Amino acid sequence: MVARPSDVTRPDRPATYESCGDVDVVLPARWQLVDRSLPNLGGGVHGRAYRWDTSTSRLELSVGVDVLELYEDLDFDVETIEVGSAHVQVSRAGAFGTSDHLIVLTWTQSDQVAPCSNYTLAGTNVDEAELVSIARKVVG
Image 1 (cartoon, helix red, strand yellow):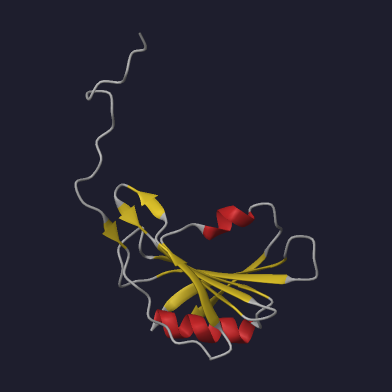
Image 2 (cartoon, helix red, strand yellow):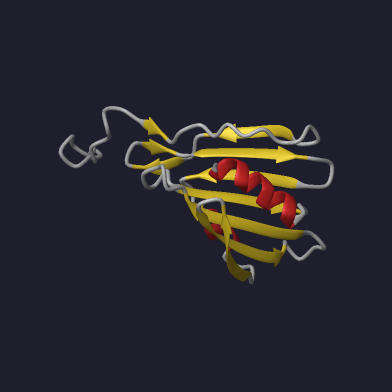
């Protein structure tokens, strides 16, 4: 007979789940929302993830998720800029061995509590000025 874990050895799960706040940002009409999800951040908290596409570009907005871990193999040029009241880290790299270019903006949203205060806006083949303009709408 195979022993099964007893209730004592199972980790406790939270009785309720919380989600990071929804991000309501209006993008130009050429951007089509193609996906949104609630990634599990652990501890009973779900983040937010949104993806918009055009025929040549992709834009991803994540709340609570450490997106830069996904791109750990890329070499980024990094600088910090001011966008509204936020200090935004701008990371630039070529993407995936192609002619695509990737720009990732990360910042802490001061009106949120961790982990929901961690915001990332990643653009593939998106002009940096447009990406910063979108971040400005999100930062508020």
